[in-house]
Image (cartoon, rainbow, N blue to C red; front, side, top):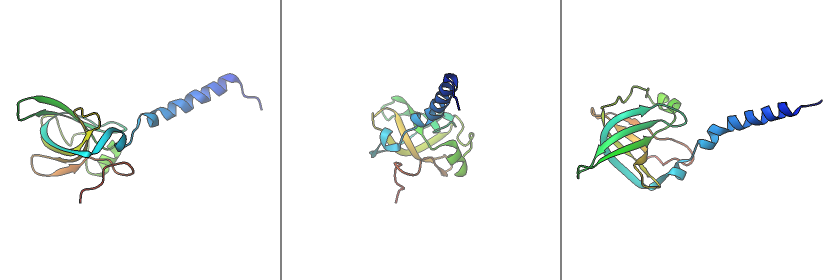
Length: 137
């Protein structure tokens, strides 16, 4: 059987394209510090319900009056849907309380765990599995 160069090149390109999303994905420990739990309150400015992770964008005003723009990473949309979330679960303008873990680079990024809404209900936002932060006891 004879395979021409174009066929081999096309196969290699398809393989590389299929692997690209896996390369972009990361473990909890690679980005976030289990030893830096964090809690804050703020107002949601946007929710991104996209793969491989969802994101909440939150404006936080500190006690000194400084405004910070936080990005809080959550599980994949499919995992959040199984937990009762949908893309409209937390609309812009909603005040939330966030519990999570700060990024290793100490930027205004965190891996979200529990998101508490104004009515006191909460939604689990974290990732589960190998490398993820352990459940609270």
